[in-house]
Picture 1 (cartoon, rainbow, N blue to C red):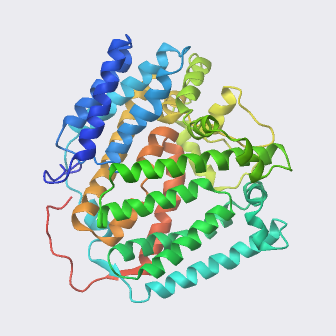
Picture 2: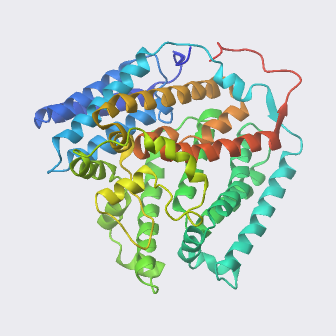
Picture 3: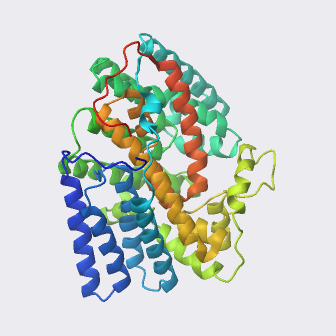
Length: 459
């Protein structure tokens, strides 16, 4: 079956937790007279009552629903002057997504088996790890010199200077190459460690190198993603994530996002900005506001609905123009913009010095291209991609195939990003990630002469 039913024997603690959350949200919405929000949360509650899908905390379809229920609907409910059409569009897309996911024909494509069945670690995987991270380290040292650092260790004192140079200096592909060489081995070694293929010392060393690289380059997102990937692999292979661990991670991640975000903003506006200045003036309320200020996609989509409602749709041109993204803008100044940068300029949030972009969700992208018919288009996109990834996740959990687990870890943010950022953004980032996994699969794994025995139905 394409969207196979989850095994009934799995722990369902997180599914019950989210069911309780959405039931409470539904009741609160009814008491406040917000019937539209009550309907959305009732639909989410009904979905979490089903036993047909594994809706664990990190399961793809669970992440899709959290993107709707928490990332969009909750902030939208706090907007006093929201346009009524905004909630209507989001609610209809949510209903279309879940209905299509549950009603689509169930066909067996054997996706998980095709991605990595019978593949095991090569004996040389540790040597490959060392070679990749050394090559990445040498490339990083060269890039710090190009960015103007006479001492490469000084990049830790001013990561924003390095980040800005790599962003605007035409170094995008080089940045991706360095991230692949330094960070991807850490994910592979994490899988190997929890499958008892390597030691804890190797695991800690390789992961520390990847984390230091993320901190040195000012890429807070890559550091947080690495942490999520490690705990996802641990969740599948060793010990399932519990509530206490989630609370601990939130207590670490929220201040980290706030401090790094405030520091980045200060450095962009003042050359004299320092981490000490951020820490001395950042209050608890500032930290919470800064951390959750990134949950602004609902507000951005609300602005876009007002600005774009009476304009002609692009009729899918955003998806055709995606082929042009392989050409760097430094070579093609008038290259068509991605949907999110385009919508950012439509609502007047344009910075002449930076190619900034806000998130408008799959909703903004489909409304830009198809107007109100985009509800169906968005529902189809999210249902198909979310369902395919749910299928792969189920296979990874049941078969514990190292390569399939690697696929799940590298693409773990795709279900959330699909709803939050749209299909075009996801195709670009996920396409590059898929290419990297294919290379890693060739470098680190080979096919075993004795295939894994079939222990469950093929997905």
